[in-house]
Length: 436
Image 1: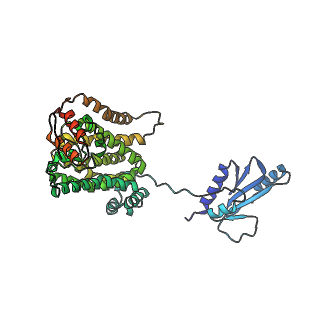
Image 2: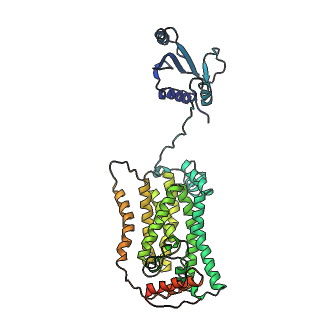
Image 3: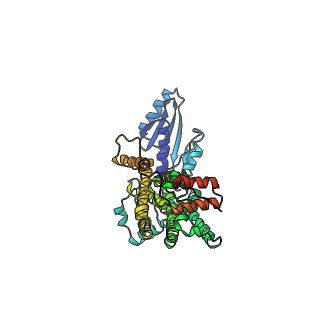
């Protein structure tokens, strides 16, 4: 990095000031004296030292004060290489400063901080060349903005955690779909032709199996399987949500940070699963719309917060439109607006609220009203399921899809005969003889 001489002089002057040296400026020369050793003076000047009578008088007084033992170290900031006085330390770069001053200060390590980009508003950005702006929004690697360049680099080479999450939430449902197709087509498993049975069998969340029969593992698996529903609609969600979700996850980890987004998304995932276990008392919840809603909620918060770079805000707005459209259309296409849309909204809001709480400045004396709203959303989503528990009929009506799912769990050795039959009796109060 090429640094001008004035910057080098400022850095050296700042170094002495940080070391608690007293400074006296005479002409273009700064004289530094430490209170512990007033027999040594460091003179720092740019190009030439001051030779005025004031400087001579200053040095004379300090020489008398030190009993004639005054030592003057002259530091000249210059590109000159032909200085005749060998006692003068000539410095033309920070590297030279670190090397030549190490004899006096062994731990010296001067370096210039990178200049902070001046914050500009979205209105100012819009005044730029439209074609270049569009190109930067499509490909942030072309932008001169360092935040966008960093995002582009992270998206091209995602963190290992982002890749793992992408595999779990994008490819696991795809694998489960192929397993289901194999069991139906090659093992002739007719029970799995019923979409509700397939959902329950592979791990969808609901009240009857998750809470009533204490299969709490479903709170972890509900988004790892496709929503079989109508086969065509399920396939549409699997492909469309998978593609959109993978891109959004990469962007979230790049923009929000790996640890922060991992904590927020995992916490939201568990809270939403727990809520859905009480809320879905007829039918089930599964599919990739919930992880997509979690990621989209976090992205929307980055647009809303004032701390986000204006370029990043615009880039995020450019990327957020498609996920929101997908989250709106999928429940409509699947005819599950009454059951899936409230859970999508919950995931969206809880994710945004948790990220807000993580980013919040808790040392601030005056609390923002948004803080209380975020706390209300998170607390409400945790407390509400316990209220819903009191609204449930103790003995559920017989559900053939659940019976089929339990029968399949026994058939494929996922539950013992005694355990499966006890589940059926506890749930429906009927004796059911299971046979493989």
